[in-house]
Image 1 (tube, rainbow, N blue to C red):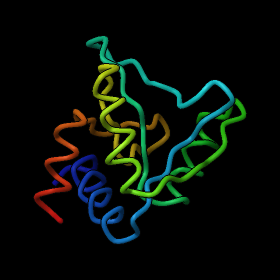
Image 2 (tube, rainbow, N blue to C red; image 1 turned 90 degrees about the vertical axis):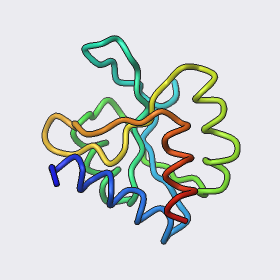
Image 3 (tube, rainbow, N blue to C red; image 1 turned 90 degrees about the horizontal axis):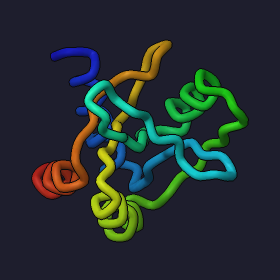
Image 4 (cartoon, helix red, strand yellow; image 1 turned 60 degrees about the horizontal axis):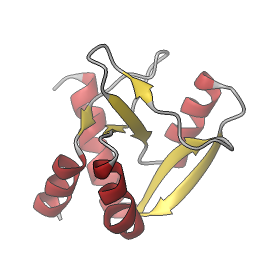
Length: 114
């Protein structure tokens, strides 16, 4: 399994276990990364430590916050889908790279694994 694949697997396993997702934000909101194919991803992490590393790498005054998994799943993911964003999961490394999924794919994985 690739590094990104193992990070994605850890994301779904960890959030099911803890019931929490983590993200970074500033006063403007969550940073959306633009990929080479012009899609935007909102990144989320499965632990506070992972999100803290991302905030440190990105800098720019980002702070770490958490959200209950059920709130994220039921309220946030539908809004993210309507806005046309992807969900980046457990991005890591010095350039914060990893896999992104559509909100539907995230919901399917949560349903299949839960």
